[in-house]
Amino acid sequence: MSVTGPHCSISGTPSAACLPMPAKPVPLFLNPVAGRGRAGRTAAAISSLLANHGAETTLIESTCTGDLERRVFEYASNEKGPIIVAGGDGSVHEAANGILSAGHHTPLGLVPIGTGNDFAKACGISLEWETAASLLAGRIADCVPGRLIDVGRMNGRFFANGAGIGFDAKINRIARKYRWRIGDLVYLVAVLEGLWDGVITPAVVMRHDGEEYRGRITLASISNGAWAGGMFYIAPMAENDDGHLDLVAVAPVSRCQVLALLPKLIKGTHIDEAGISCRRIESFELVAEAPLPSHLDGEDQPLQKEFCIEVLPGALSLI
Image 1 (cartoon, rainbow, N blue to C red):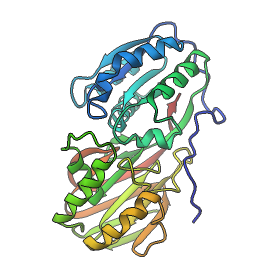
Image 2: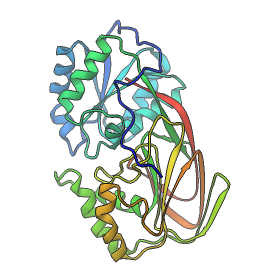
Image 3: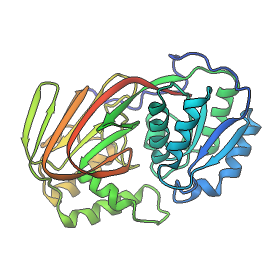
Image 4: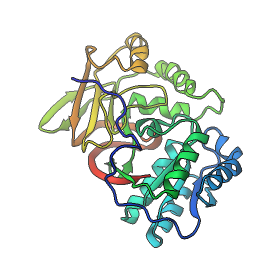
């Protein structure tokens, strides 16, 4: 299996129609609590920097979970032209669901200012928000075409970067309760806490592309982008513009085995380890004998027993 790095460079060959120069300010949707509150503290600076580089914006701050998605949906349903989102993977998740639920190819620009910024890394967007914002403003002002990237869908909800079922979703839930400003390390702390409760799921049935597995697992990660949890290079083969998703499934392992795998998961050298299977897939189903935790783009989902996942090639236009 070949291993490659991120493959969604903004400067690559354009595959979407050229953006018309906005006739009015571009809506800047911002989640003020993203990045442990960093987005809210820098909102004015983001708006100013975008304007200084040619993109006038109207700031729209979300007020609670789901508000950004609702506001993006309303805008995409009634207006044409691009939008900008300032936030992390959760903000991207809500924006993607708002855009795709509206049924339009509303172009999305991102200023990454979250905790993990996995989607930004997968798309080759600078993690320095000042650099990302200035380059984005220039692309909007210069009518640079958007690039079409794939999106996944699980049980009716869309995900831009990845879905997780089992232990990775469990540690994601733990990480979200911390308010420490320690960046990606919050996920590592969550792993250590999550080990105490055990790492193996109830029995499941997994089906994908004609294959079937029955038994227990530690986790199933379905990736559109290569990173998860900010620091884990979980699917180094993943490319979010290839029309496929990448499944990384981990067989039942002990707590000690999880600890041994951690540095390899960070480096992306776990792919050939015993008990880990990797498949390029277009669809995936999992049925568990008891409800399991799951996440989409790092956003916790209700406990569920059945999961149905598919890829939607080229569904999202990224500026």
